[in-house]
Length: 111
Image (cartoon, rainbow, N blue to C red; front, side, top):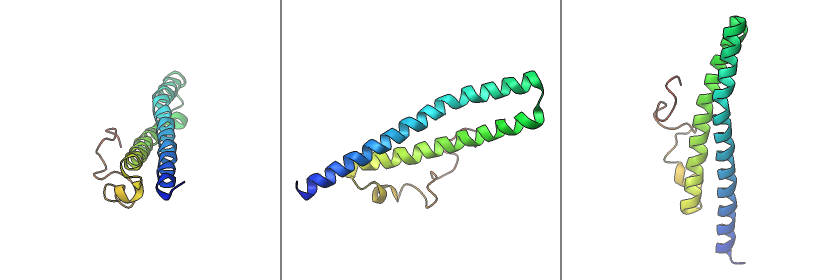
């Protein structure tokens, strides 16, 4: 196997792992509103404000974190598919903390 084929195979494996990660994040993103609805209904029906209101706030934080994580992983996957060197390619797109530039871009309003 030539060096180029090894690099291509490694890039393909990396891209596959990143796509799997995006799929898992999307699954969590789909499930989260249902969980939030159930907690909100429990809050409304039981009146356990002190217990359940903070849980709703934490679910909002998780939703924001999922959006950011999905964007970061998707950007890495995009870089892996275009040049095989996703880290170098996306270093210009993402700030050092890894969060998308302009904190509010593409995030839910409450983030």
